[in-house]
Image: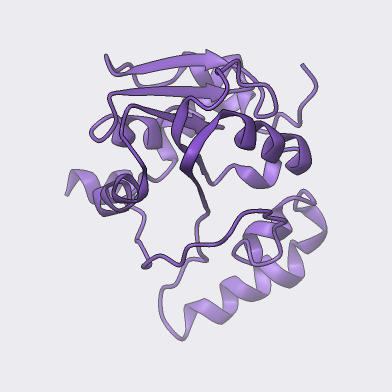
Length: 193
């Protein structure tokens, strides 16, 4: 399998540190779909989005190109985890109500992934992609972090990170956009408080 694998070597730590997403996001996405039979979470990593989707969909197929990430995924009876690249899901034609890519689509081969999405989505189905926004602390710290991120470290980021830094505004996306409310990610620390 040929993909840029930035996370397999650290998949256990990745599973512990990756922020989760608020339930309101998944409730909102489920409200947009024609039915709630099947969701495909592509680039699932260790399954944070997939677990949340399972509260709203009868079945979730969660795929990732990294076998190590899938091995660290959170088990759940409503989720079937598969090792599969974003461009070749193994799903049936017109079978999926919702496709999600939580902070992952910037790593994909966009043309091939979008063709796969069009193949597997039911008529009226939804694709939802999102990423994290920049960390905001306060007016003293934020400029320092921005200087580090945008200037000091700019040559060390993988090319695909530019999509994230620009909040997916430059991401190729051949679907009609649906404007959504803003949602706040949830860190492990916040969950345990």
